[in-house]
Image 1 (tube, rainbow, N blue to C red):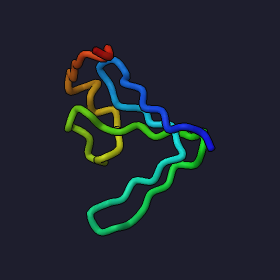
Image 2 (image 1 turned 30 degrees about the vertical axis):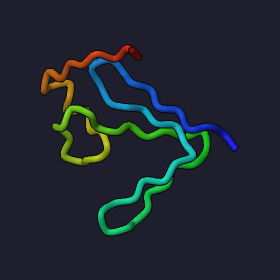
Image 3 (image 1 turned 90 degrees about the vertical axis):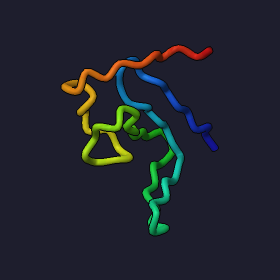
Image 4 (image 1 turned 30 degrees about the horizontal axis):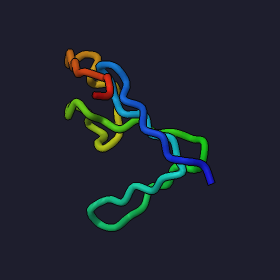
Length: 68
C-alpha cells in the first residue's frame, strides 16, 4: 500500500496524494485512490471547502511553505 503524502504548496493549497478518505459532517465519504491527489483549501476563501477552487489567487493568500 502506498503512503499518503501531503505537500504544502507555496501560497496555495495542500496537495494530498492518496489513498485517503475524507469524511464530511454527515458521515459521507469522499475517497481518493492510491496515486491520485486532491487539493485542500488552506486560505479559507474557497467556495468548495474543504477543496481548493483557486480563490487564493485573487484573494492574495500568502503563507510560509517550509517545514520547520
